[in-house]
Structures are given as structure tokens and as C-alpha cells.
Image (cartoon, rainbow, N blue to C red; front, top):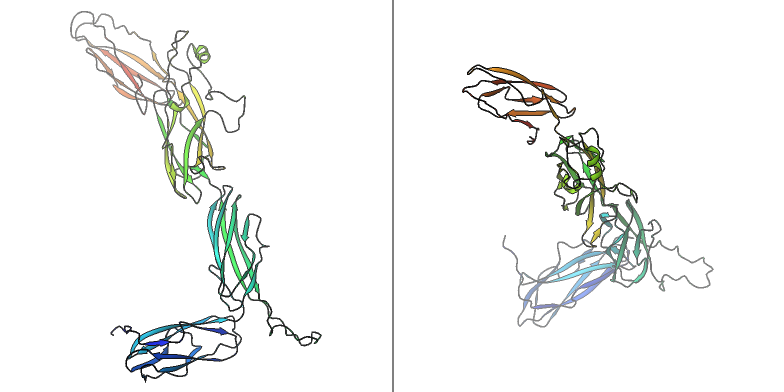
Length: 496
């Protein structure tokens, strides 16, 4: 079907728009004029637009008529509102065709006689907000679509103290609108949904005022003022960070590393969960003291010294505690979490032993056991305020134990093989004791001329003993002294 196009306007309608009043009961007829402004006669036809309400009807000019230059054609519009539906707003359009082409479109509207309130949003949903002692503000529009002025009143009695509306009263002229501001103090966690009634009243007219000296007998029953319902809903949540177990996704109030040898590393993964509806910048810090420990708390890394070698007491006096920042590390230690994002963090425990070189000689063969307790703090940082966000930090206790590699050989070196004929093997047995009751050990031996070891490598469980067979097979004459190296290995890295 060929698209209908507007032709150059040759006629003029007496009104730019047709505005009627809906009184709810009376049928209305209104006459308007179409005038031919062109140089020659034209065929003119008027019709109600297809998208118009059915209350509008044309009583004339429904058929195409010739109109000479300068002459006018009357157009009679009938408006028939439904019974008592005087609060309804009707709209439509009047289309004028010139020589079978659409030339003019005149909008038609019928507004109620009384004040008619209209909300731009019947439901104001603020969504999910964060409790940071800040004020969230939004607004909506309240309009009077009627033909009479009126006052409005918003009943805010259901609202708590943290939610307010301004203004709650006012006066609206016909076709006037005003902005209503909603303010929410984000102070505590709450989920809310409140229905507020907005009512209006119109000033009395001569028709509405009862006759004098009737004693009230002639008074008409006052109609209830029209009203609207406004729903305000949303929820307030605190900015919260949680540390979760990567397998069960349950909260981790504390984290324990398995016992770890000195000069080795042990890693664990955790999940940092942003349990808030906004993006959160976080910063991870290691602290020596628990939050709120106050004055007089432990000034160093919490440490318990158990069984150790000679010089343990002097080591304690020297206080050679490694910096806690280098013992336990977190990656990434800072970043930005999107709303409800879960991010994996890698925690590494790397105990190091450094003997003291000031004031005393270090005689102990191995370092002693150390138990560490640190406090891992995750801070939710508000970059806009250049400070940490209140209520958003999280503290997790981290416990770890550093153990020395404790091995005992029986018999103790050196081993004496004595005089041995050439190419005549002689064997001695050495027992290797793993003194640790927690961690296993792995060992491997180096190849040395004239000497062999069986087994050349192996695994020693905690508190177990393994027997090594050392065989000496001289292949030349003379003294054959050698150093047989046995490397004691941990599960992660090497410790000789």
C-alpha cells in the first residue's frame, strides 16, 4: 500500500488544538471552522483520527465537499463523556484531508473539571543502597491534569524517621506540575515498602456552595476528594566484605597454615566476597595485634618457642623475629570488587630463619619451632572521602607454625671403613631419623667415587627411621677419604 503523504496546507482550522472539559454527564457539541486559504477550489473532508477515544464524533463534514477560495466549512464535534466518569482524561485527533491528502492534524483533549492528580511514577523503587550515613535523594513529578486548581496533601505518617518527602502539601493550578523530593538517610539496614496516599481538594464554586438559610437541608453530599497511592520501596544494606572457603564457600573467621619448614613456602587460597550492592575498593593489611587489643597487648608477632637446640634462651633474648610482612603475604593485596563479586586471593606463608650476629655466638645446629599468630585486615576504602568506609572492614586471624628440618644420623659421622683390599666391597649401615612428628622428609644422595648408597633417594615419614647402606669399593691404592652429601628435601623446596 502506498504511504499517504501530507499535501501543502491550503486550508486553515480555527483552533490550533481542541480542549474540552469532562463534566462526567453532559453531552457537548462544539462548532469549528475550516477556511480555504488557497487560490482555487479544493475538496475538503474532516475525520476523527483512528487512535482517538470513541467519545469523539463528527456530526458534519464527514463527507468530502468542494470549498471555494476564501469560504469556510463548519465542523461540528460532539463529545459524549461516560456517565459519572468525570475523572477520566480523553484524547484524540481531528484529521483534515485536502484533495484526498492529509493536510492538518488537530489534537483533541478533554480534561476533568475537578483537579486531577497524576504521578510520573506510581512506584518509586530506590533499589539497594549502602548504609554509610549519607543521604540518598531522588524525585518524581506530581501534576494537575484537571481544569480546576486544587491543593494536595501527602500522608507521610507510615514513613520512618530516616525517610522523608518534601513538599508534603502544596497548591497546583490547572495543568501545572511540581517536583516531590524523596530523601533517605542510609543509616541502618532495612528493607521497606510503604504505600502513601496523596489527596486533593478543590476550592468551592458557586455550584458547590450550598444555598443560604436552608439550615443544611439542601446541602448536597460532598463527594470524596480524588486520591492517589504512591509506593516507596527499597532496601538498605551495609558495605560488607567476607572471606570464604574456596571449596565450601562458608565464612572463614580464621585461617590456619599447615606446619611449614623454614626456608620453604606454603600457599592457601581464599575467596574475598563483596557482599554489597556497590563496587568496593579494598586494601589488605597485616597487623600484629587484634582489633581493639589496646595498650599493653603483644608488641611483636605472637610467638611460642617449644623444643629447640642449644642457645634457645639467648635467641629468645635477642628477639630476632623476622618482619611479619615478609612471613605472610597476600596477592592481590588491593583492588576493586564489583557488586557481589567473588575474587580468589593467594596467601603465602614463607618462614625464614636468620641467626643473630651481634653480641653472641650462635651454637645451635637448627632453628627452633615458632608459632605465629597474625591478624589479616581487609578494609573497604571509600575513595571519594579518602578514608576507610565505616563498618566495611573485616579481620581474619591467621595461624602458622615454622618447623626446622630435624634429622639425626646413627652412628654419627665420620664413618671409618679401615683398610680394605682393592675391589673388595665393604658395607656399613647408617640410620636416618626424622625427628619431626608433623612433616615428612625426602632425601637424595650424591654420587662419590668408590662409594655407593642404597637406596639413593627416598621418603621418611614423620617420626620414622630409614636405614641407608653405604658400600666402599676401593679401585686404587692409597687413602680414599671422601665427603658423602645427603640432601634432605622438603615437599616444596630444598633444605640441605
